[in-house]
Image 1: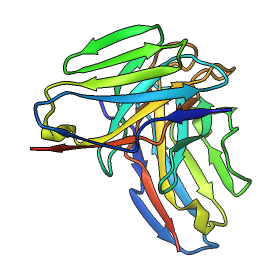
Image 2: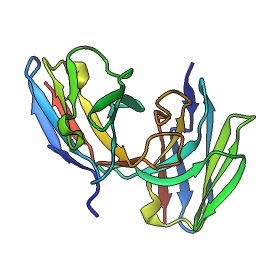
Image 3: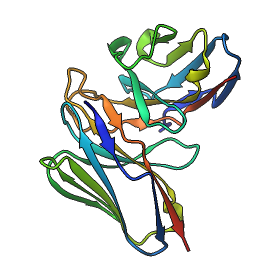
Image 4: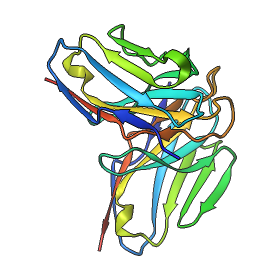
Length: 112
Length: 116
């Protein structure tokens, strides 16, 4: 079956570092996405991993281990505007290769 | 470049009524997706168009939902008749290609549907 797990809520302090974990079990795997979603807005793309390892993009990094079905999103030098929901999503392997399965999202709150 | 747009942003209807949601993908994007997020749940895939053809509609909940994309440009999602459990946010996303590429899906702002 399909299952993507991530913590429901996290809190962190401005200027600090936070790691949001995601574990997945899907019938196929063709890449993992992280999206950021502010309340009432569209999910916006943050990162994409299809091979094992760390992808760094400015203050945000994403890690993938396919053998463990595990990913994390690392946010550094946290800013108040980083308060948002972070969605882990897996693209399944199928005839229509772009079908994406989403986790429930992690609501991150940044405190001063 | 304009992003994915959706109309309306909000819709409040009564049970049994009909509602039509519209999505305009990014110009030139052949692939269009519909998703839905019900309160407290994860975003769930509904269907995928490649141009005007339905590539995958495995996520459509039942036959009260009808999606079209005549001409391969904008798409509509009609719910008829609407039920209480249809309430949620309906997102549309588009990509230029839809194969095994790494193309990112660009999301629209969503339509918040409330069925009373």
